[in-house]
Image (cartoon, rainbow, N blue to C red; front, top):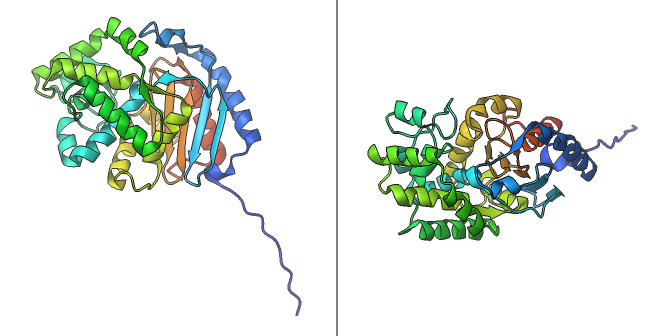
Length: 315
């Protein structure tokens, strides 16, 4: 009896299928999209970023990493930090208590909408918009804003192996042109009892948004959300990923949940984090933003990656 043995090639899927050639090609394909965006002019320090800068760092559960582009660029995480302040408070206080402070419903309004907050009688829709993030900043452990920021940053760096630090120049710039919308939001939150200390809440929020690093640092903290690590609760990871999927890109969240199908969080500093539950984290830096406030080239890159490697969590 004769047997014929066929060697069946292993077909790699997901992040494991990335090649250096493909990564380079996808970066070059994404970069021109920055021309459709505009660098944030929220502060003079944000406005100095080059719209053509682009960087990506990918951390896989296997231990493999991939990098490309302007990876030496350091940028403030801005709103990307909101996902991690949520995780931090879930770890410190538990789900029931945190959800007394903030909801998990998507918002169709802009991330700094006071009208939305007033319509909701002072209860923030979710932690990814400014009202929710300011409310959670009010609950961070610590006596004052600087103490809270230091403890939070130290917690992230110790768990993730990242090297985030407070950008004092960026913070000074933010304070110099403090957002009237954020002041109005914090004031209304104090009036409705969702914030105990208006000044500390707003100062804490501004400081944690000025925590800065490069794309590797962002990918490293992203790993905390991406897969089981023994460092944070699996339940809390799932909650943060779910809120990122439905709320992380503001009013564009539903559109990109359909187009890409990954939990993501953006920031006006140009950072974009995407998690692939069970597989890894993708961090991008691209300072040119769309009208919603999301990095244009970063989203284009993640969309291509998700389509080419079949990364959507919906199969």
